[in-house]
Image (cartoon, rainbow, N blue to C red; front, side, top):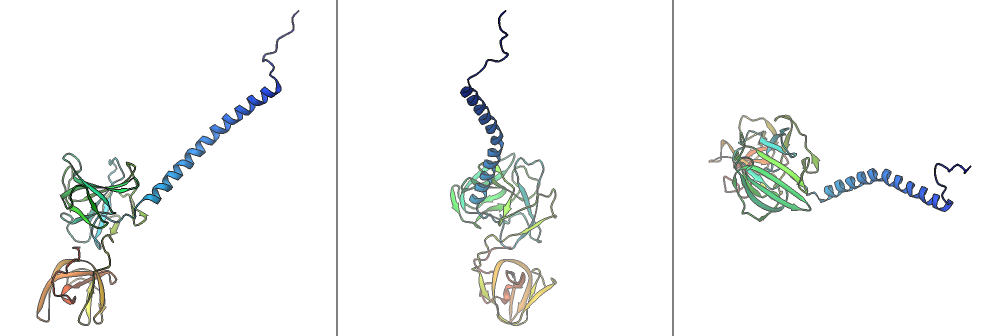
Length: 281
């Protein structure tokens, strides 16, 4: 009678240890793979954040706009319209960071639009422009006008459709280092621009008791008063009520950065009714 064969062949001890060690390495690798994937994803996000420019709002300094997101959008876009009493259509569209601008047209979608390549994998998109303000392939500075707000392409009204992309993928929009909300309709959130403010538009006022108003109208509430000649920084200007003083008349008003209100340009110590080099609000 022959001996009964074991169910499994006996292995030399050294080989058995090698097999067990190999199995342990495989299992350890399977366990570590998800952890490595999560770590790599975290590192990619960190690199993206470090590479991102300090994006600013895509419209002029001092202007207050509201924004919303359409759930049908493929990428993480936001649409902006003015909410400060100004007209959206025709308002300058500004580069939110420096880079190389290229012009495009899509009749059934984006209309006239500009893409700015900021380097490091980052790009911004500006859709539905009424007109272009820069040449194709031009280098643009942050705050430089690249077009005017319009409603070209597939659009139901003037607005700025704005996107930030990293390596071709749409990102949640960040302005001045802070992420914006994604409301489903306008007038839930607002953003006042500091793009293109610079701080070089410094002027002296004249006169005493000059009232700074909430808007460019004599009926607007007074927010503060300039006791005497004061050096002020003007962020933007616009037309409003006509003011008469010392035999002069002027309907241009300046928005003051530090006083957060408007004064008639008639009280700015400058010979021009409309201040040179100051953007339109």
